Image 1 (cartoon, rainbow, N blue to C red):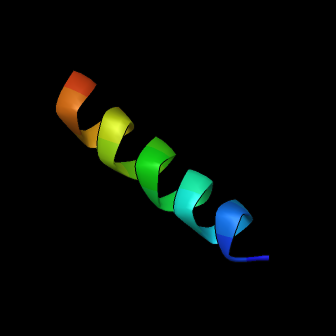
Image 2 (image 1 turned 120 degrees about the vertical axis):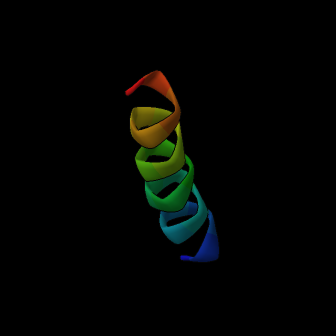
Image 3 (image 1 turned 45 degrees about the horizontal axis):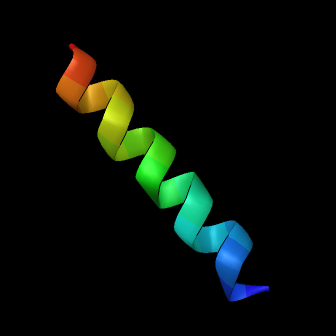
Length: 19
């Protein structure tokens, strides 16, 4: 599903932002 892909991308961006 596209939602899963979006969630994964969002998580990666959040991890990078938290860094």
